[in-house]
Image (cartoon, rainbow, N blue to C red; front, side):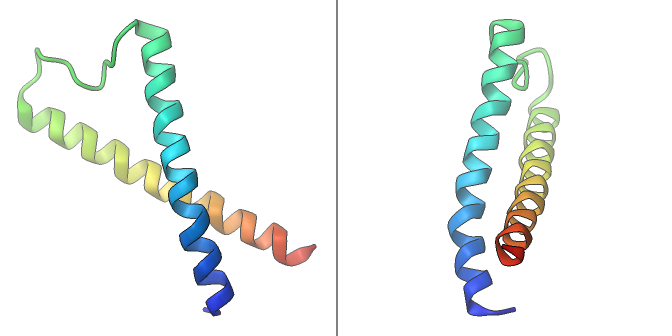
Length: 76
């Protein structure tokens, strides 16, 4: 990996990650009127697993988008 790619990835990844998390929570609130990811009827273990799974999934999605943007930038 080149240092250009690493610096680009570290700059863009966290930006895309936080934008995606914000959009995920915003859409959840708009659809249901509250954050349904955290339901007090569920056990804490389930809430932690569900939250962890969502954050990890968003991380993989953000890495994919960042890599895709790098490839588009490199082609131009």
